[in-house]
Image (cartoon, rainbow, N blue to C red; front, side, top):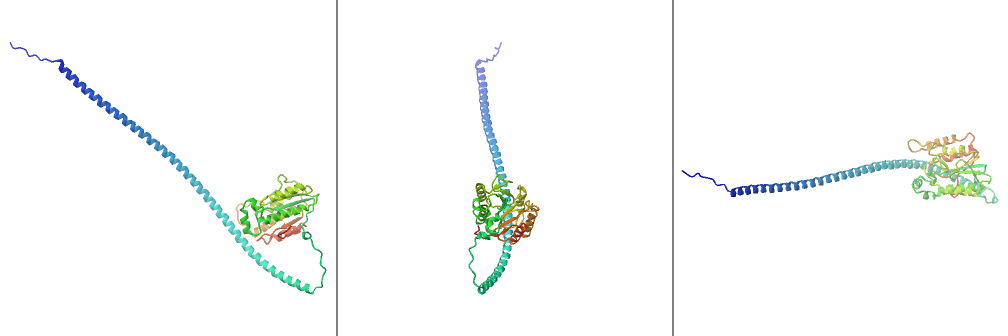
Length: 357
C-alpha cells in the first residue's frame, strides 16, 4: 500500500509572508507621510503667498485713495486758480477802463488848461500895460495868508467830514492805483493824505473853546475817527480830545470808493444837529447809498448824478457847508458842484495850494 504524500507548511514561510506584507505596509506608510508633508508645505506656501497678495491689494487701495485725494486737491487748486485768474482779468479790465477814461478826461482838461493859460497871458499883458500907465502907489502892508481863507470854523457844533477814499492818496490816477495796493503804513504817509490831516488839525486849532465838534472819516461808509463816539459830540476846550481825534485820523489809511450820501447821513444821526459842516474831499462821489449789484466803471455823468442824489438827501434846512477841495486829476466838474453846495448853504469854498495849511 502506497504511502500518503503530505505537504509540510512551516512557520518560516509565514514569517516571510508577514515580513513582506509588513514591508509593503511600512513603505506605503512612509510614502503617505511624505506626501502629507509635501501637501502641508505646499498649503503653507500658498497661504503665505495669498496673504502677501492680500497685503499688496490693501496697499494698492491705500495708494489709490492717496492718488484720488491728490487728484481732488489738484482739481481744487485748479478751480481756485481759474477763479483768481478771472478775478485778476476783471480787475485788469476795470483798471484799463479807468485809465482810458481818465486819460480822455485829462486830455480835455489839458486843452482847457492851455486855453486858460492863453487867457491868463492876455490878462497879465493887460495888467502890465495898466501898471506902466498907472501912477505910483504906496506899498501895502503884508497880508497874512489866513486872511485869504474863506472857511468858517465857528459855530456851536462843528462836524468835520474827511474823505478817506483811495483817491485821497494822490492827485493822479496812476499813482492812486499804485498806492492803493500798498500796506496801510505806506498809504498814511502819502503827501495828499497828510495835507488832509493837517487841514483838520488847522481847523481844530481854530475852534472856539465853547464849540462842540466831531470828526468823521468816510469812504463808502462814515465812521467816527475816535472809537466809541458815534452820535455824540466832543468838546473843543478839551485839548486831549482834539489830540486823540487828530492822531486817530493820522492812523486812518485811505481805501475804497466814496459815498457822500452816506456821509451826509451823519448830519441826521447827531443830536443836536450840527450848525456847521466842514467837508474835506477831492472829487465827486463814486457810489450812492448802496453798492451797485454789478461792479462797473463809474462815468463822469454817473458821478454827477451821485452828487445830486447826495445833495437831495440833506435835511430840508441843511447847515452851512464849508468845503476844502483838494486837487484831483480827471474830475473837472467837482469844483462847480462843491462851490454850488457851499453857496446854497451860505458856506465857504476853498481849493488850497499844495503847501496849505
